[in-house]
Length: 441
Image (cartoon, helix red, strand yellow):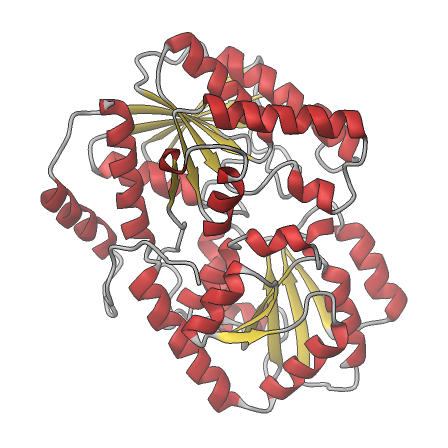
């Protein structure tokens, strides 16, 4: 069993302003600290007006509330949709997003063409982000994030030139995940990618991971455990709340009277949406059950074609929703689904969507083994099904559709556990402590 580091405790009933009150309480407890200016290079940065994960936006808001500044260099495309976020002439455009400085720079618009072109696209951002980062003055700490790993190299290079600490944030294990999936199979390229991975581990001042299994993986690369800090992302317990009303979403998608199984997230090869389609095929005669997929990604068109081929009327591709609307989306669900391919390396991951599901008070059907299964089973917050097993998935969904009492109990357990152990306010405070330590060292 993996321990979860936390500062939190149960806080049911807070209003929306409680986030900032809580931040001030932590500030008073831990003391102030001089102003820090931190540079983050993350091509996939997402604001609340876009689909995707907003953890770095929330980190920037938290740091701002404490008197610090996070300057973010990001691409001008949304990673999930591949569409332009801003139109601009020249290499960059600067945005002010709720008081956060975000510098958008060029990336080759080829994220969804093929894996080869995706790598070329990553390289283009690596180059443009270095050029733009050279113009950011008076930084105290440089933070790189992976995947993709090339942008982390940009962050290291800037930290080397500026002689500032380099914090490497590992959100997924690259290249191990794509090697394990069989996507990346050129032995020379694999060797080069693993060299770059180990280079960044060794050159980083410190490494921040969001899964306990990532820490173990990196330690096995001959990295000092003292150089690694595990802080799970958690979720915003006020944003994702059981009292949010999802009736508008149900009405817009004609879901009234249906048992809604929600998947929210990327529609890529790793996400194994084809298993969901096969499970839906098995349940085609259960008229009250419907699978709703919110998200976008490289495989969306292929998945839509497969749905049409199978003539599935119980699957809805609902498109994308900005992060600020996701609480209503989750509130519309009866049960939520997290799924990845049956690849051993995926047992190391903490999918962010699961924490959002839990905070919203929803039970999770979990088709992912490993460390996240430990969380769900420890919390009594859902049911594990074997990854890739559509028959087991279909049976589990059918059983839950007939047992609302069990669903309600698991949803309640999920919320209680999340608030106690994985409140993002506490995790951001832990991250700030790490920043301060690195800047002082």
